[in-house]
Structures are given as C-alpha cells and as structure tokens.
Image (tube, rainbow, N blue to C red; front, side, top):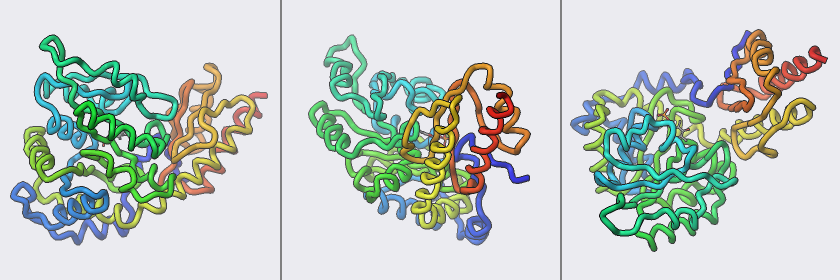
Length: 340
Ligand SMILES: *Cc1c(COP(=O)(O)O)cnc(C)c1O
C-alpha cells in the first residue's frame, strides 16, 4: 500500500533524477568558498529572485535566524506575526541567541500584518524601548498568498519608518505560481528573502537567503556562528539547484490537488473546510472533538498519515497524486458513513 503522507510538504523524498544530480555534483570546501555547486545554487537563486547575492543554509530556521541577526543589533526589535514561523516556530532563536526582541502582532485574515497596527507598535526613539528596526512578513502564510498590492504599501511603510523588510518565503514559489506572477513581483519589495528548498520543491535539505552583497556577507558570518559552515555541501546544493530548475512550475499541480481535496471534503456534512477555495497547497478543516481519534485511526489503517486534530491541516506535494487525494476523500467519506 502506498503511504499517503499529508502532514506537510517537507516529507517529499528526492526523486531518482535528483539523486543522480546529487551523486554527480562537483564539490569543494564551501567554507573556503570553493564548492562550485553551492556557488552555482547561490548565484542561480540570487538571480531568480532579483538579488545581488545569496547564501545556502542548512534550514529555513537558520536562514531566517541569520537574516534577523544581519538586519538587527543587540537591543533591536523585529515586528512579526503572532503565528509566524520566525516568531513561534524557531525556538525564539533571535531572542535567545541574538538579544533581539520580537514584537508579535495578529495576522489579518489575508495573512498580512495591518500597517496601522504595526505603526502603533513601533517604539519611539527613547532609551526605555528596544529599537524597532525590522519587519518580517511570511508568504505563503497558512497557505494564503499575500495580496500583491500589499507589498508596495509595506515597502513604502518601511521606507517611512526606516525599517528593513524581510520575507520568510519558505513557500514563496507557491504564492508566485498561484498568483501567476514572476517571483520577482514579490521578492523585489524586500531587503531579504528566505526560501525553502526542502518543502514543495522536493529537495531533501536546505534553504537559501537572498539579499544585498553586504547583508549576505554578514549573514555568512552569522551562519558560521550558528554552526552552519558546511564543507562539501554541493551534494545538497545540487538537489536544491535541480529543484529550482525543475520543480517550480509543477507546484500548480499541488494546488489543483489541494482544491480537489477541499471540494471533496466540503461536500461531507460533518466537515467544515476553513478556506474555500484553497489558495495554494493546504487544506484546513474542522471536525467534532469525538471524531479526532477514530478518524485519525481510520486514515492510518488506510495508509494515510495526517495530523488530525479539531483543526486539521492537509498538505499536498510532489509525492501526492490526484488519485491519492481522491482516495483520501473516499476514506473520510467512508468514515462518516459507517458512523451513521
Ligand atoms: C518550514 C518553514 C520554515 C523553515 O523551516 P525549516 O524546517 O527550518 O526548514 C520557515 N518558515 C515557514 C513559514 C515554514 O513553513
């Protein structure tokens, strides 16, 4: 039985061709700047996103961490979403290791941070306060692609308030593909952008941080401090390069599958889908509290892995086919039918 794992798009496994690219990658010692494949990935990513320079990192968490460390000084503050990865899901790294204070704010319904709300939280220039110096946005945010018109306003806002602007673009390509725009239509508004290679793009490991040459030089220092100076990392970078060259456009298939799944689930009376239509590769729904455990069991029995809760997130990706999502709909439908 094929295992259908819908917990996240991080569960993708490198394909045979990707593994071949890894196996035949030219390598060198990247701490000396000598790995041609790492250099090729960094140059390719910088160009693709419209930046001067880029840095390969071990993870998205590391990319965001070195970005915040490079933008901020000790005693600075960054404004960030209450549910944002860069606030909630990165172990508080910037605060723990960098003495940089987060100021979390609630996301609006479309995944943006309201600019008036941000303005109200920028600290006055006074020694009582941390210095507000960075705004971090996230795209996609919970599967939502931020509206394009927001970026122009956010950029102008940051100019006015002398803030730097960082994008946690772990799933930036999902947003660009869903909105049918070149990725630079989003990335050009930011001082730095991190992207994940290890999610929907299908690489086993790695992220890239893009920015100006100065910012990236600084980030390289912080990456070393964070233990992220890697040696023959070209083996990994080859997978990332393959992913960026081959797996971006096909994200549209994941989005189509997510929408099929969403529509199928929305027809089941006991299920309440939370985003209709879906925007990218995520489906969110709620079920009754008593259904959580038995539904999870039923899925497991049928080879479907999902983090079922009162609010459940299902994520489509390159190891999930249309037949797979149809099976998932049937199994969930079957669960509620046999329950009566
Ligand atoms: C996955 C993710 C990251 C980075 O996660 P890693 O597991 O450290 O690679 C950052 N931001 C968002 C929004 C993510 O979903």
